[in-house]
Image 1 (spheres, rainbow, N blue to C red):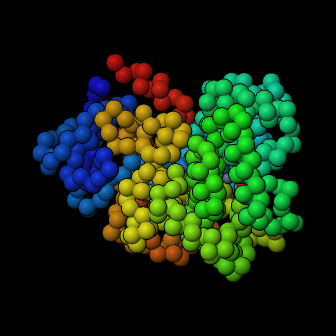
Image 2: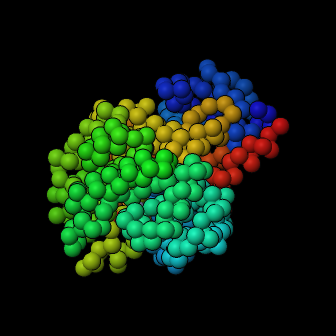
Image 3: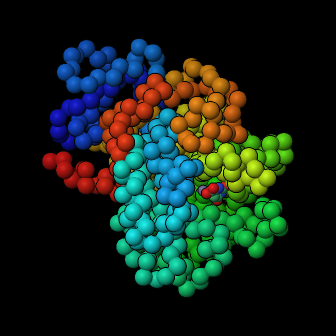
Length: 431
Ligand code: DOR
Ligand code: ZN
């Protein structure tokens, strides 16, 4: 791999599964790591140099969040690609995958096209887009040029439009396109309640589809270890869960009625088992389900479900390493290298390695601080983790070799982020 060395980053880095002191990472003008050398750096570079050695900071592979809602369009008052990707950058997240439950829905080719345009004009980190289940067959073919995969919602899974849905599943199966499932059965909802049975029934349905069509399935925001066991036992399906299902439970919701989320927070017992399952290495990925709403919508008689998570996920995970519940290696696997594999981007990102993009999160593992949602870059200035003490502060975030966040500030320009579908093209430019 050649090209001009444009950036040099020096520090302690997480490379090949372990922390290595004093490494020099050379990056070319396309953002690709050209050389990693060990030992104290003695040379003198004319290029832009970032020295993280002095403060004993740790350079990690940049986080990748495969379930976020950037909103925008008619819901820009909740979040837009600039505020959402700024929140990502502040949280050490270098790629966000955006869900299609937008207004208008991202389930037609023209809307997808428009979404890509808006995202490319506003994003400060890289992004991937999911496509929603279309209403008509003619909107199925070709979405994969811009979208990384499909998102299936409970109402799709339990057939509001059986014919188009089946056609779509056949299409994605034939092309091995990632299909992310929100697995819940709406027929088992009781008024406002969404019991565990509804989620289990949803997961069983995904297993059936997987068996029938061999669809490349991923079940997102799983709340119970029961589904982890069921799915891992029966099929080659990947799963993720979110920090709120690992760290919060129903008792929290009873005391804080505004912090509603779907699927809901479960009992203490279910929550503790899920955390144990995570520590045993049975879960593939962590996502935030970053779901911002305005304060008016959130703190109302009927609070909208979901909350922002991009600025708290990595610090919360790093705090779990301090408590010895998971290891640093697990954090990298759950929030970077496995998500890279699930999105089939592992040739480009998910590791600090020569010939891969320099997508990096620089963290201070010794810094303890209190989460203050008022300071979020997200437009949603609330969090169920507000006031929590966490250890592991994100100090800098690099996307394709360029700093996007440093010491509390966004330093890249609006529109720097690209659709990950373009990664292959960037690499083709290298001779
Ligand atoms: O809590 C949630 N919020 N769950 C979802 O499935 C959707 C999300 C949203 O878009 O607000
Ligand atoms: Zn979601």
